[in-house]
Image (cartoon, rainbow, N blue to C red; front, side, top):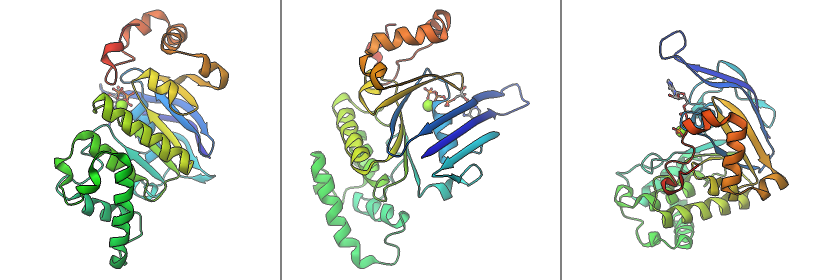
Length: 273
Ligand SMILES: Nc1ncnc2c1ncn2[C@@H]1O[C@H](COP(=O)(O)OP(=O)(O)OP(=O)(O)O)[C@@H](O)[C@H]1O
Ligand SMILES: [Mg+2]
């Protein structure tokens, strides 16, 4: 269980640029729960993921994973339990290394391979099979530099690599936003499959509300560093995109809602409110 208790974070406190990015935010995720996160630009979504991954320490509050207090555990020590994937497909892999080398690196990072080079071939074969299932022609490109693959291919590889050593928690920060619709759907399908098969507790940020409502079993909306909506069960099942936007306006007020762009990067064609 991932438990966030009253997280508070102000960036650059005491300066003119001070920004109160998380306000008293509490959230509990059951094991294997898959939660989508929406909210306008600057609402605090990435900050929430950064707090959980340990990109920085919160000013107050507590982060507990299975009862263990991670609040002041540095990010690199959380990495074994908590994987984070970003929007930029270049961020999760080493572009100058081949696909094969990246995979070896992922195994080494997962702590399974540093001293067992003989197992490399077998692992490579297993990974090749996984790649083949993606139907992106990647299995025949194990010797290709990652930097030469398309964004969608790289994100799919990043996702496979991040879950080689099944993390307790998976944090996805608009990981399909930079992809074309077909690649985005493939990576979303893969996400769903990996998360469900391994029952990984997941937070997935998206600007695409339709995606937010169809992936996972619960959707939270952030605004001003707070959770303003927490939807699950029947209430969520009954909601469609216009319904959720109406609920958003109701919750934050029409004036603020008009001021915000909820749907941006993933679905620019759907920005009508
Ligand atoms: N390291 C930082 N230093 C200063 N301010 C920051 C820092 N990181 C985030 N912020 C500020 O905190 C606020 C929340 O940012 P955050 O990146 O969490 O938003 P977001 O919900 O992910 O938005 P987007 O949809 O644009 O990705 C923003 O106003 C941002 O400028
Ligand atoms: Mg963000």
